[in-house]
Each structure stands twice: as C-alpha cells, then as structure tokens.
Image 1 (cartoon, helix red, strand yellow):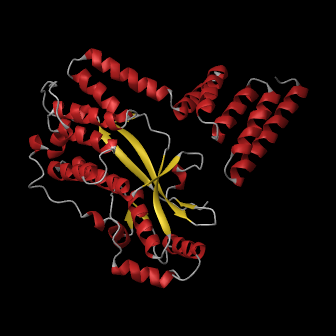
Image 2 (image 1 turned 120 degrees about the vertical axis):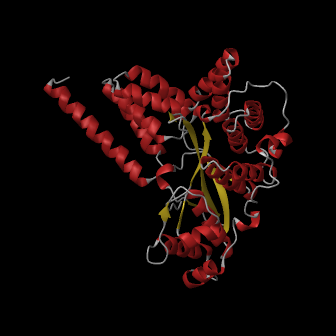
Image 3 (image 1 turned 135 degrees about the vertical axis):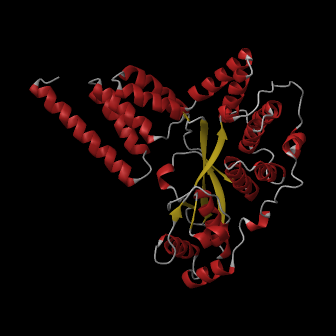
Length: 391
C-alpha cells in the first residue's frame, strides 16, 4: 500500500436551529422531482450554472507541462506512480496547502491548495493522463456523532485507488491520519465522485447564504449524477428548512432515507424537525432510530469502551469491545484496548492473548512493533508488582 497526505470529504447538514420561519410541517407528499425543481426557492432557471461536469477532471496545459517535466510516460506503472507522487508532495516542485474549499482538478493545480476532495480530483486527473488506472474509492471512516454549534457533521472519506495489474493495488490517500486499512472501502464511479463534488460546492454556497447557487449544485449532484446519493438529499432538505419550508425539508430528509436507510444525519434532522413542530411521537421515533443506529456502530461502541476504561469501569469497556469485535473483527485498536482492560483487571494470560491478537491484525510494521513492545513492557511491570506485593 502507498499512502500520501489528503482526502477527506466533509458532508455537512446544518441542524434545525438554523432554520427560519415557523410554518408547520405539511403532510402533503412532495415528489422528488418537485424537490429538485425548487419552486419555493425560486427554481434553478435564473441561478448561476455550476461548472460543467467535464471540468471537474479536466487537465489544463499547465498540468500537462508539469507531467511532462516530472513523469516518464513510457516507464512502468509503478515508476510513473512514484514519480507523480514524489513531484506532488515535493515542496520544490509543487507543494500542498490545505483549506476548506472544494476545487476542480485544474483549479487545485493552479491554486496549489484545496480540501481533500480537491486533491483527489487533481490526482485522478493527472494519474489518468499518464496512463495509470485511477479510480475514486469511498472509505467508511468512523462517524462523528457530536453536535457542535448547532451543526451536525458526518465526514465521508474518499481516496484514490491505483490498479496495478499483476502487482498489488496502491492506495493514494492525502489524509493519512483519517485512513486505516481496516476501514471498509468500495470503488465508486465518476458519477458518484462528481456527486460528492457538487454536494460540497452546494454546502459551501449554503453556508454563505447563496440559496440559488446551493440549489443548482445540489440539483447537479442528484439529478445529473447520482439520485442515490443521500447526503445531497439531506443537504437539500436543510436548505429548504433554512429558507422556511419545513414540508419540503421533511420530504427531502425522507427521500434521503429512501435511498439510504442508514443516513444518520437525515434521521437526526427529522427528529429535530418533528420536535420543533411539536410532533413528539414522531420525534421520539426518529430519536430511537438514531440511537439504535449509533449503538450498532462498532466504532461508537469502541468510543464508549474508551470512556469506560478511563473511568476504570473495565467490565463495561469489555462488554462494548466484545460487541465491536463481533461487528468488525479486523480492527487492531479494538483488540488492544480489550487486552488493556484485562491487564488492568489483573488477568495477564487473557491480556496477553488479546494484545497478541492486536499485533497480529495490525496492518503496519510500526503498529505491530508498538503492540509488541507495549505488551512486553506492561507484563513485565505486572511481574515486578507481583513480586513486590504492590498490587
């Protein structure tokens, strides 16, 4: 595997406290096409057109010149890939600066900055230009269940997969801190990647209060690329709510759940919408759905285990970790914390077994060495304490 730095796609839905107006929720069905037409928001006829789809991955003359100077196009694929990576991460030849904005491939190259999706766009475009088989890949990173400043944020991670034929495939990830090889991944077509792009652009416009532009980009994400992309439906609902149309917001959130029954942001937003409108029964129903979905997530249970461990409630931590491992058995950090729990309980043989399992599952040599040294150090300490009678 190869990892480089960058690639987090922020999919954001603003919480209902940001909405205007006090219109009650209307039970009348609003069709998906009506949501996309956006009549209450003025429609899309007079809104500035989003960039053309082919612009997202367009390679500029400057990019071609950069590739000609740094990548030998007739070299083997593994050589071309390494040359491309080296040229991009080298501050003398390129240099990367991270910012929150989303850009096309050519914009990212020109500005030398952008968010992680921006750099994925640029890398895919450049890799394909030199003949590499590059695809976008979605990564299921642990969700952020926090609600901060009335904004509920769920991060969706995207990186780049380079298929190398007879050799092992290579992953290029510009945000290595957010990527672990144990995370579930799936290749996505360019239409889904463009849906990510236009959705992000729509969120950026929505944050600036540019309703027409936000609507146009959410429409492009959904209607022209991927009608099954639930985050764009969810964000479209938030746009309607901010403008004072709760019935349309409800319909958009429900459409998000039709295409993805596990969209936790849509569930949470519906719960808050119903609560605000005084529909306590449906609010409770969706809060229960959110809670059940959250408790079934192995990484959420791992976070609960960490909290329990810090509080020295090792039995509770063990219970959460056993559930997490039952749902996902290739995550080394689950086994490591489980071993630490048994170590704190004074059960050295069981601790050794789970720490050894963490070392076995770990994806990198650095992690394996860390677990091995931690195991030997802690068990040695326990042996010393046993003989000195300190426990």
